[in-house]
Image 1 (cartoon, rainbow, N blue to C red):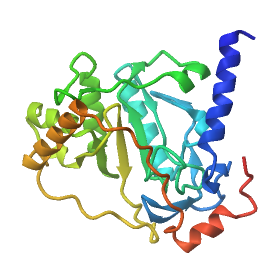
Image 2 (tube, helix red, strand yellow; image 1 turned 90 degrees about the horizontal axis):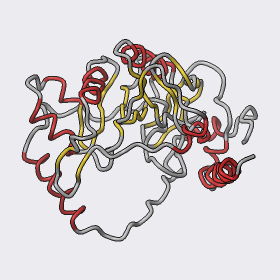
Image 3 (cartoon, rainbow, N blue to C red; image 1 turned 30 degrees about the vertical axis):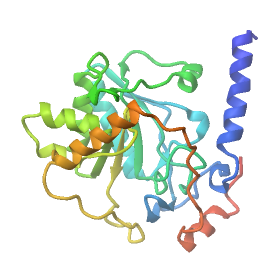
Length: 285
Protein backbone atom coordinates (compact mmCIF):
# COMPACT_ATOMS: atom_id res chain seq x y z
CA UNK A 1 0.00 0.00 0.00
CA UNK A 2 1.14 3.55 -0.66
CA UNK A 3 1.83 5.85 2.28
CA UNK A 4 -1.02 8.10 1.12
CA UNK A 5 -3.53 5.24 1.15
CA UNK A 6 -2.34 4.01 4.56
CA UNK A 7 -2.73 7.53 5.87
CA UNK A 8 -6.23 7.68 4.44
CA UNK A 9 -7.21 4.42 6.14
CA UNK A 10 -5.96 5.76 9.48
CA UNK A 11 -7.84 9.03 8.96
CA UNK A 12 -11.00 7.12 8.04
CA UNK A 13 -10.75 4.96 11.17
CA UNK A 14 -10.15 7.99 13.39
CA UNK A 15 -12.94 9.96 11.76
CA UNK A 16 -15.38 7.08 12.14
CA UNK A 17 -14.40 6.61 15.79
CA UNK A 18 -14.94 10.29 16.60
CA UNK A 19 -18.12 10.55 14.58
CA UNK A 20 -19.74 7.59 16.29
CA UNK A 21 -18.54 8.27 19.82
CA UNK A 22 -20.85 9.17 22.66
CA UNK A 23 -24.24 8.75 20.99
CA UNK A 24 -26.13 5.47 20.82
CA UNK A 25 -28.06 6.60 17.74
CA UNK A 26 -24.88 6.81 15.69
CA UNK A 27 -23.89 3.27 16.70
CA UNK A 28 -26.93 1.67 15.06
CA UNK A 29 -26.00 0.11 11.75
CA UNK A 30 -29.41 -0.65 10.22
CA UNK A 31 -32.93 0.78 10.11
CA UNK A 32 -35.77 -0.76 12.06
CA UNK A 33 -37.69 -2.86 9.51
CA UNK A 34 -41.35 -2.27 8.80
CA UNK A 35 -43.62 0.49 7.60
CA UNK A 36 -42.12 3.98 7.80
CA UNK A 37 -43.01 5.87 10.97
CA UNK A 38 -41.83 9.43 11.58
CA UNK A 39 -41.82 10.23 15.28
CA UNK A 40 -41.24 13.65 16.80
CA UNK A 41 -39.77 16.80 15.30
CA UNK A 42 -36.95 17.53 12.89
CA UNK A 43 -34.63 18.38 15.81
CA UNK A 44 -35.96 15.87 18.36
CA UNK A 45 -37.20 12.63 16.89
CA UNK A 46 -36.50 9.33 15.16
CA UNK A 47 -37.75 7.12 12.35
CA UNK A 48 -38.68 3.48 11.88
CA UNK A 49 -38.76 1.92 8.44
CA UNK A 50 -36.14 4.21 6.93
CA UNK A 51 -34.48 3.11 3.70
CA UNK A 52 -30.98 3.79 2.36
CA UNK A 53 -30.29 6.04 -0.59
CA UNK A 54 -28.14 4.09 -3.08
CA UNK A 55 -24.65 5.58 -2.94
CA UNK A 56 -24.59 6.16 -6.69
CA UNK A 57 -27.55 6.90 -8.90
CA UNK A 58 -28.59 8.68 -12.07
CA UNK A 59 -27.46 12.26 -11.56
CA UNK A 60 -26.09 11.99 -8.01
CA UNK A 61 -23.43 10.48 -5.74
CA UNK A 62 -23.39 10.27 -1.93
CA UNK A 63 -20.51 11.92 -0.11
CA UNK A 64 -18.96 10.77 3.20
CA UNK A 65 -20.65 7.33 3.13
CA UNK A 66 -18.48 6.23 6.08
CA UNK A 67 -20.72 8.38 8.31
CA UNK A 68 -23.66 6.05 7.59
CA UNK A 69 -25.99 9.03 7.25
CA UNK A 70 -27.67 8.19 3.94
CA UNK A 71 -31.02 6.93 5.25
CA UNK A 72 -34.42 8.56 5.10
CA UNK A 73 -38.15 8.19 4.74
CA UNK A 74 -39.09 6.63 1.37
CA UNK A 75 -40.53 9.98 0.22
CA UNK A 76 -37.13 11.61 0.79
CA UNK A 77 -35.30 8.88 -1.11
CA UNK A 78 -37.76 9.20 -4.00
CA UNK A 79 -37.32 12.98 -4.00
CA UNK A 80 -33.50 12.80 -4.16
CA UNK A 81 -33.60 10.22 -6.95
CA UNK A 82 -36.09 12.32 -8.93
CA UNK A 83 -34.01 15.48 -8.48
CA UNK A 84 -30.95 13.53 -9.60
CA UNK A 85 -32.69 12.49 -12.80
CA UNK A 86 -33.71 16.08 -13.48
CA UNK A 87 -30.14 17.25 -13.04
CA UNK A 88 -28.76 14.37 -15.12
CA UNK A 89 -30.89 15.54 -18.02
CA UNK A 90 -28.74 18.70 -18.11
CA UNK A 91 -25.52 16.68 -18.05
CA UNK A 92 -24.68 17.20 -14.36
CA UNK A 93 -24.29 15.08 -11.21
CA UNK A 94 -25.28 16.19 -7.70
CA UNK A 95 -23.11 15.52 -4.66
CA UNK A 96 -25.33 14.47 -1.76
CA UNK A 97 -24.33 15.22 1.82
CA UNK A 98 -26.03 13.95 4.94
CA UNK A 99 -29.58 12.63 5.07
CA UNK A 100 -30.14 10.86 8.41
CA UNK A 101 -28.93 7.95 10.49
CA UNK A 102 -30.51 4.49 10.07
CA UNK A 103 -33.05 5.20 12.81
CA UNK A 104 -32.74 8.95 12.84
CA UNK A 105 -32.15 10.53 16.20
CA UNK A 106 -29.52 13.09 17.15
CA UNK A 107 -26.12 12.96 15.50
CA UNK A 108 -22.99 13.44 17.60
CA UNK A 109 -21.70 16.10 15.20
CA UNK A 110 -22.70 18.29 12.30
CA UNK A 111 -26.45 18.81 12.75
CA UNK A 112 -29.16 19.55 15.25
CA UNK A 113 -31.89 18.46 12.87
CA UNK A 114 -31.82 15.61 10.29
CA UNK A 115 -33.44 13.39 12.96
CA UNK A 116 -36.64 12.07 11.33
CA UNK A 117 -35.57 11.10 7.82
CA UNK A 118 -36.94 14.19 6.04
CA UNK A 119 -33.79 16.34 5.62
CA UNK A 120 -31.04 16.19 3.02
CA UNK A 121 -27.97 18.31 2.29
CA UNK A 122 -26.86 18.87 -1.30
CA UNK A 123 -23.49 20.43 -2.04
CA UNK A 124 -23.07 23.58 -4.11
CA UNK A 125 -20.65 21.59 -6.20
CA UNK A 126 -21.79 19.54 -9.17
CA UNK A 127 -19.85 17.24 -11.44
CA UNK A 128 -20.26 16.32 -15.09
CA UNK A 129 -22.81 13.52 -15.32
CA UNK A 130 -20.22 11.08 -16.64
CA UNK A 131 -17.77 11.59 -13.79
CA UNK A 132 -17.92 9.29 -10.76
CA UNK A 133 -15.78 10.02 -7.72
CA UNK A 134 -13.54 7.36 -6.22
CA UNK A 135 -14.26 6.10 -2.68
CA UNK A 136 -11.25 8.11 -1.52
CA UNK A 137 -12.59 11.31 -3.07
CA UNK A 138 -16.05 10.86 -1.55
CA UNK A 139 -14.38 10.96 1.88
CA UNK A 140 -11.79 13.68 1.27
CA UNK A 141 -13.19 16.12 -1.29
CA UNK A 142 -14.60 19.29 0.25
CA UNK A 143 -17.31 21.69 -0.89
CA UNK A 144 -16.20 25.31 -1.44
CA UNK A 145 -18.02 28.24 0.15
CA UNK A 146 -20.16 30.20 -2.29
CA UNK A 147 -19.83 33.49 -0.41
CA UNK A 148 -17.27 36.20 0.30
CA UNK A 149 -18.43 36.72 3.85
CA UNK A 150 -16.36 39.81 4.69
CA UNK A 151 -17.88 41.58 1.70
CA UNK A 152 -21.39 40.18 2.15
CA UNK A 153 -21.62 38.99 -1.45
CA UNK A 154 -21.67 35.81 -3.51
CA UNK A 155 -18.41 34.54 -4.88
CA UNK A 156 -19.29 34.89 -8.54
CA UNK A 157 -16.22 32.91 -9.57
CA UNK A 158 -17.81 29.82 -7.98
CA UNK A 159 -21.57 30.38 -8.01
CA UNK A 160 -23.18 29.08 -11.18
CA UNK A 161 -26.48 29.02 -12.99
CA UNK A 162 -26.70 25.32 -12.10
CA UNK A 163 -26.72 26.19 -8.38
CA UNK A 164 -29.66 28.53 -8.89
CA UNK A 165 -31.45 25.98 -11.08
CA UNK A 166 -31.16 23.23 -8.45
CA UNK A 167 -32.60 25.55 -5.80
CA UNK A 168 -35.54 26.43 -8.02
CA UNK A 169 -36.19 22.82 -9.03
CA UNK A 170 -36.20 21.73 -5.40
CA UNK A 171 -38.39 24.60 -4.24
CA UNK A 172 -41.04 23.75 -6.81
CA UNK A 173 -41.43 20.17 -5.54
CA UNK A 174 -44.71 20.01 -3.57
CA UNK A 175 -43.27 17.79 -0.82
CA UNK A 176 -40.50 20.31 -0.06
CA UNK A 177 -41.42 22.55 2.87
CA UNK A 178 -38.36 24.79 3.04
CA UNK A 179 -34.75 25.05 1.88
CA UNK A 180 -32.03 26.56 4.05
CA UNK A 181 -29.21 28.60 2.48
CA UNK A 182 -26.80 31.21 3.74
CA UNK A 183 -28.47 34.64 4.04
CA UNK A 184 -25.99 36.08 1.52
CA UNK A 185 -27.17 33.52 -1.04
CA UNK A 186 -30.81 34.35 -0.31
CA UNK A 187 -30.15 38.07 -0.69
CA UNK A 188 -28.39 37.52 -4.02
CA UNK A 189 -31.40 35.56 -5.29
CA UNK A 190 -33.71 38.35 -4.14
CA UNK A 191 -31.70 40.78 -6.26
CA UNK A 192 -31.38 38.62 -9.37
CA UNK A 193 -34.74 36.85 -9.70
CA UNK A 194 -37.63 38.40 -11.59
CA UNK A 195 -40.06 35.79 -10.26
CA UNK A 196 -40.03 35.85 -6.46
CA UNK A 197 -42.81 33.30 -5.99
CA UNK A 198 -40.38 30.40 -5.52
CA UNK A 199 -38.19 32.32 -3.06
CA UNK A 200 -40.66 31.90 -0.18
CA UNK A 201 -39.34 28.42 0.54
CA UNK A 202 -35.73 29.62 0.44
CA UNK A 203 -34.96 30.37 4.09
CA UNK A 204 -31.81 32.08 5.40
CA UNK A 205 -29.80 30.32 8.08
CA UNK A 206 -26.31 30.41 9.55
CA UNK A 207 -23.67 28.41 7.69
CA UNK A 208 -25.14 26.77 4.59
CA UNK A 209 -22.67 28.61 2.36
CA UNK A 210 -21.34 25.42 0.75
CA UNK A 211 -24.58 23.42 0.58
CA UNK A 212 -28.36 23.70 0.52
CA UNK A 213 -30.43 21.94 3.16
CA UNK A 214 -33.74 20.63 1.87
CA UNK A 215 -36.51 19.75 4.33
CA UNK A 216 -39.63 17.83 3.34
CA UNK A 217 -42.98 18.35 5.02
CA UNK A 218 -44.41 15.66 7.29
CA UNK A 219 -45.97 12.96 5.07
CA UNK A 220 -49.80 12.95 5.14
CA UNK A 221 -49.96 9.60 6.96
CA UNK A 222 -47.31 10.48 9.59
CA UNK A 223 -49.52 11.23 12.57
CA UNK A 224 -46.60 11.32 15.03
CA UNK A 225 -44.56 13.77 12.95
CA UNK A 226 -44.47 17.27 14.44
CA UNK A 227 -44.56 19.89 11.68
CA UNK A 228 -42.88 23.26 11.84
CA UNK A 229 -44.85 26.47 11.96
CA UNK A 230 -46.14 27.55 8.53
CA UNK A 231 -43.82 29.73 6.49
CA UNK A 232 -44.40 33.47 6.84
CA UNK A 233 -46.05 35.17 3.91
CA UNK A 234 -43.97 37.05 1.39
CA UNK A 235 -40.66 36.36 -0.31
CA UNK A 236 -38.42 37.11 2.68
CA UNK A 237 -36.48 39.76 0.75
CA UNK A 238 -36.76 42.38 3.49
CA UNK A 239 -34.86 44.51 5.99
CA UNK A 240 -34.49 41.59 8.37
CA UNK A 241 -32.57 39.67 5.70
CA UNK A 242 -30.34 42.68 5.11
CA UNK A 243 -29.57 42.91 8.85
CA UNK A 244 -28.69 39.20 8.89
CA UNK A 245 -26.27 39.65 5.99
CA UNK A 246 -24.63 42.57 7.79
CA UNK A 247 -24.20 40.43 10.92
CA UNK A 248 -22.42 37.79 8.87
CA UNK A 249 -20.19 40.41 7.27
CA UNK A 250 -19.24 41.91 10.63
CA UNK A 251 -18.61 38.46 12.11
CA UNK A 252 -16.21 37.71 9.24
CA UNK A 253 -14.37 41.01 9.78
CA UNK A 254 -14.06 40.46 13.54
CA UNK A 255 -14.14 36.70 14.09
CA UNK A 256 -14.55 35.35 17.61
CA UNK A 257 -12.74 32.25 18.91
CA UNK A 258 -14.45 29.12 17.63
CA UNK A 259 -16.51 27.25 20.18
CA UNK A 260 -17.40 23.72 19.22
CA UNK A 261 -21.18 23.31 19.56
CA UNK A 262 -22.50 20.77 21.98
CA UNK A 263 -24.10 17.70 20.38
CA UNK A 264 -27.90 17.69 20.49
CA UNK A 265 -29.46 16.26 23.62
CA UNK A 266 -31.24 12.93 23.70
CA UNK A 267 -33.34 13.97 26.71
CA UNK A 268 -36.21 15.49 24.74
CA UNK A 269 -36.87 12.59 22.37
CA UNK A 270 -40.36 11.06 22.29
CA UNK A 271 -40.67 7.96 24.48
CA UNK A 272 -41.33 5.78 21.42
CA UNK A 273 -37.83 6.51 20.16
CA UNK A 274 -36.28 4.56 23.02
CA UNK A 275 -37.95 1.36 21.80
CA UNK A 276 -36.81 2.08 18.23
CA UNK A 277 -33.21 2.61 19.33
CA UNK A 278 -33.02 -0.48 21.54
CA UNK A 279 -34.79 -2.96 19.29
CA UNK A 280 -32.82 -6.23 19.15
CA UNK A 281 -32.50 -5.77 15.38
CA UNK A 282 -30.27 -2.72 15.88
CA UNK A 283 -27.04 -4.55 14.98
CA UNK A 284 -24.66 -2.09 16.60
CA UNK A 285 -21.68 -0.92 14.58
